[in-house]
Amino acid sequence: MRFIVTGGCGFVGNAICREIREHLPDADIVAFDNLRRAGAEQNRLELRRRGVAVVHGDVRCQSDVDALGDCDWLIDAAAEPSVLAGTAAMPGRGVTARQLLEHNLLGTVNLLEAAARRRAGILILSTSRVYSITGMATVPLAERESRFVPDTTAAMPPGVGPRGIREEFSTAAPVSLYGATKLASEALALEYADTAGIPVIVDRCGVLAGAGQFGRADQGIFSWWIHSWARRRPLRYIGFGGRGLQVRDCLHPRDLARLLILQMRSATGASRAVLNVSGGAASAMSLAELSAWCRERLGGHAVAASSEERPYDVPWVVLDHTRAKSLHDWSPEYDAHSIFEEIACHAENNPDWLDSTAG
Image (cartoon, rainbow, N blue to C red; front, side):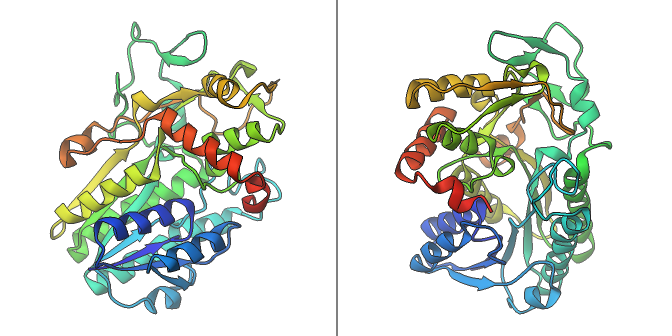
């Protein structure tokens, strides 16, 4: 089988390529990447060592995509990942609203066109950020000593249960420009599945975290926080009272990659699926709790409180992955503490990681 992984030299794409190589040693794997991000070059060299072909190109350029040739599956792991991309809240990063649309939507259109012509399956990595910000703000929360939790005594909006946010939760605007590009990509992918008769899978991912994640908060808050703590860099709790009570779940990219392999093996014809993929409630952690873990593992460090309020921040986002577990007999193998320990060891062994990969 031949697999093309866009964004293949990124943190997630690299993990997918490596996991496919491990589980399908005879597969022909192509990592397609524009090598724009700092840190991608290190992954490029490691992938080549493992027998993965690395092709320099850009999903925004149809001729680059066309030059990749035939394949059995296209895996779209290329994206501008920040919820603040294209807004005034993200200055100095060189990502305008137009660039965001070209990366996350036009790039996906080019891949969908290629998949339809080649009769290939396509797997879209989406995000929890397709869910309505206004809707998430209506989830009733109670305050515990170290985190926000759903208030089980109050009525929940449709699509929220004890395990978190389900796939049927509202995707009504606003979802951010970033979320809108991913939601539009999802809709187009499902239409292509219907008209072209190809299998399409959409995985809405929670926060991905692990060793080797590039050094920016918007590319993975858990990894960035631990690296920053290890280097004793300034840290702040932003918004929601400045106490770090906001909660997200976390997922190791190898657990995601294992699921992708299961999904591709079982997909047939014009099958279509939209699934939450996350560490779930068991992996949910607040920033205050992450700081407590860092303090015990890495030593003391002060965290400032900030009254700043940022657009699109929400106090609690935990995805319910019950559907993925039921369909594919899949569960994450990495718990939050093992993920954090992996990141901490990486931070100790790579003291310059934040600076070398923050671009």
